[in-house]
Length: 236
Ligand SMILES: [Zn+2]
Image (cartoon, rainbow, N blue to C red; front, side, top):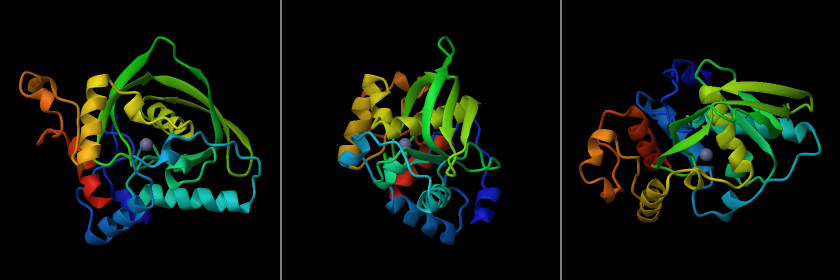
């Protein structure tokens, strides 16, 4: 499993969240990816709208749960996963912001500070919203307080992609999806795609003069991020 992760192309800040491009995976990795994505709850499941409860027992089962989450995140080519997405309403998330970064599990994460003036807008995908990419504006820098699976408290200062992944996963623990964070027009296009089993990506500037209102279809090419997320719907 680690081979696949190590050889995966490194993420940059332009990559959409959670969904990494499946390009270049061999058949076995694609099968593992499909099996992992099959375990992730998809849009329409009411659990995804539910608020998760704090963890109070740091036992062996918690350690096993986070190991399983990391395995599903990696096999699914994700950069983050919240327990909510597996139907477990406990405040646990895992993330790996970059192919060479270590996978980290956080229990009871809280954003204790975020940059009030510095925001960034970037495209995000979600393993629970296959085929959908949306633009989300978030604070660029955050500080998160959490525990590791052993109950040791830790503080993480994060910026850029790492900050974005953490905010996306903490949103999941509060029952919030990127649909609620995206501009209204994009949300409308994404909802239509999810209902009809299509794909959605925000219109690129050069396409807005065209038929942006049609929504449902992602750009045909030129953005590996969008196509990667779209391919995810096939795997799930
Ligand atoms: Zn997500």
